[in-house]
Length: 74
Image (cartoon, rainbow, N blue to C red; front, side, top):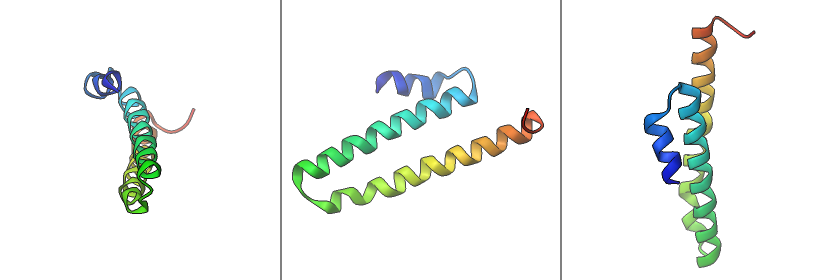
């Protein structure tokens, strides 16, 4: 996870930063879900849904931005 965080702050390009952020959040979601299963408390999983949704919307926003900047699909 430390390498992901390094890539998020020092990524050479925008897609590298987005990919590192995606993998970091996926790992965090898995850890949250494992903790939820371990403690058998479904209320701990409430934070996972907004986190995963936020990253999904971030991916869509960055993809639209890159399409607009690059001049469309090639």
